[in-house]
Image (cartoon, rainbow, N blue to C red; front, side, top):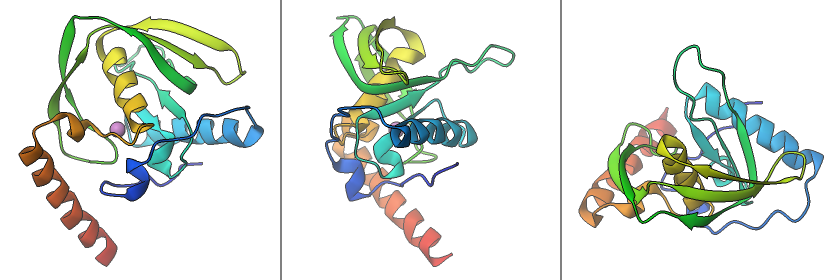
Length: 172
Ligand code: NI
C-alpha cells in the first residue's frame, strides 16, 4: 500500500523517533509499504516519520542504473557506528521537500548496524550514494532534515516556499 508522504514543515518531521523493541507483522507491513511508497515516488530512501510513524525504521535502495538489480534494504534501529574523516559533498533532496536540492557535506564512508526484516542484526560499510542516503535517512529519525545542514538563510527560503506550496495543495 502506498502511504501519503508528509511535507515539510510538519511537527512530526521534527521529532526524535522511538527505538523498535520487537518486530511485529504490523511493522513488517509498514516497512513493505514504505518501500513501495519510495519506489513509487520515486526516491532512493524513506524514513518512517515521513509517513507519520515515529519509530526507528528506514528503507533505501540506491541502485539507480537502468538494468541493475534492485537492492531494497529495510533497516530497523539503524545506527552509524563508525564514520570516515574523509568527507563527501552530495546534492541532496528529500521526498518531504520536493523540488529543492542543496549540497550537503557528510562523512564519505560509514559503518552501519541495523536489524533486518527477519530481526537479524546486520552490519555493512557503505560509501558513495549509499553512505549519503543512509545518513540522510537516519537524520530523519532524529527529526533532522537535510536543510538543517545548510545555511539558515537558504533553509528559511526553502521553508517559506514549502509553506506556500502546502497552502496551495490544501486549497486544491
Ligand atoms: Ni529525506
